[in-house]
Image (tube, one colour):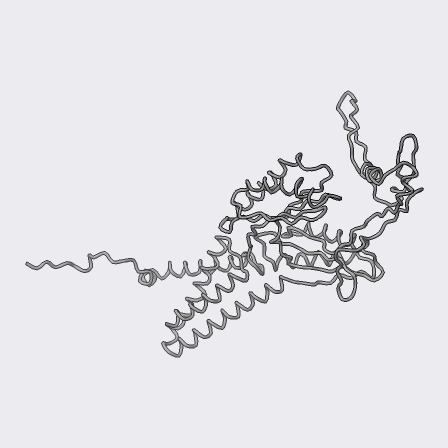
Length: 417
């Protein structure tokens, strides 16, 4: 006995092409929706030169003026290293010690994700802070640095003939303050400013004649710059805290310091030469086009379009330059927005060339109707890609653009085949 089955009653697998042909109005609506979503995603998508990297290294620095290498090892480095061994996801700790200072490098494991890295670095700060009372008095720091991933989207030089470094630094501070109010700017960093120092030249003989030592001089200067609580005054309504602040910022203030030895009081200016000037020898100095300069770098916040932020930064600099005195010039050294603009333009040119090639080959081989359908597939797929990239937070940058160009080549081949 033979059993026949009606093929029309068999369950067929879902076929997207058949469904689109059977529902042309809905298909056209969905195509338009995808194109619109892709266009909006492309316009709102963050753009920058390089992707975000998670740096898994932190540097801890401690300075103890006058300490020997052995003292730094025993009193500072060993204590900090032992505490850092408790850091989660720790890979290794390495230290470099010299007289008066130490640098400790900590690295977490390579498979640690970004959130765990942040937590590990927080634990480093917390654990070192827990042993701060065990570290020697007079230690400067420890200082922590884990911001190795900052990239300047713009770098400008501020220079001028006849202007000193302190004057150029004031202009740079003004520019930085204006830039920090610009949308999309996370940081504005001043580079190349020369720190001002106050120099005290005094002979040991002059100190000894008055019963003083170099330690007495150091303590007097430190004490003058300290802020100490002096109690409080009860007004009946509230308690007002009183503090004594002796902030020394000028050489003239230092000259008026009084050094006490028993009943004898000595004015510092009577036994020492006090002068102010730039750090000598200087650690580093920047020049631009042959002129000494102070530079300002801008770090963009995450999720912003570097081209939009670049325009806002440029407008901020135009307002800043309008208030500068004659002779001060502002010059742009690096311009990441322009680099990103060129990269995106190159991709769009490649996309246009791909569409023309596919359309030309298709029209010549299979006719205009089928060729047009194939040509539409390329921008449609890319629009869907842009919409998904925007939704999951992938920016347009060097890596994603490279991947899109490779995918575009595959897409062109598939469309033609």
